[in-house]
Amino acid sequence: MALLNSATLANAGDDISALRRQLDRSIAYEAVENISNAFGNWIDDAQWDSQSSLFSVDGWRQKYLVGFYAGPARIRAAETLQVSVMPSPRRSVRIHLREQPVITVSDDAQSAYLRTRLFHITSNWGEAGSVKNGMYPNDAAVLEDGIWKLSVVAIDEPYFVSNGWKGGWARVAPITEKRRLTTPPMMQQMLDKMPPDVPLTAMPFREGAFTPGPAFVHYPEVKPMWFHYRNPVSGRVPSHYCPDLRTCESSLAR
Image (cartoon, rainbow, N blue to C red):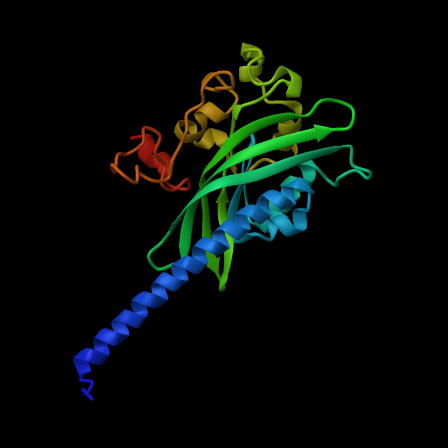
């Protein structure tokens, strides 16, 4: 039997450490996908206690056309302000499917970036349902006290909407200039009663096309589509590239 010298033992230790890192990164990938799906599921049923508990202590949750709320308590309060509880019996169902995840885990398996597509289906008791979609291109997660938590959830939407099932997405009227400049009443209520910790107006380069105002873009116009990663084959940097939503605004402004 060959004797194990110090060099052999060191190499074995390195191999075990490498395997440990690979395992941790695999666990991270599955955990991030799980909390991503849980986020969509809790929204469907207005389960704000459960949904807000998915966020890290300083996690950011974006509300459409409003901005970002930071921390589980603020996130829960914002969600409750918009939709307090589901009526009983329910007369409508809104499904938020977060599909086609692209998850980039850090080398040390302590953080991750996540990009998913939103497929949003609605059905109603008294009128036709509809379908629309959006993107979550800059979500992020972090390992906090041994538990994976969402650190950023940011929705870009809609890339298409439908005029009910009958009208489809080919019969959607062009946006009016009044609509381009006006925040809808429900979102304006949030701005007035509970201003966000980080308003969309603080990110004019990253969020300009998603913020009511002159630069606002709405279907059937084509919104810009953002990515947190380079092209995995060519390495090309996308024209709308934001690797970290918390910090990319300063680089975009240069």
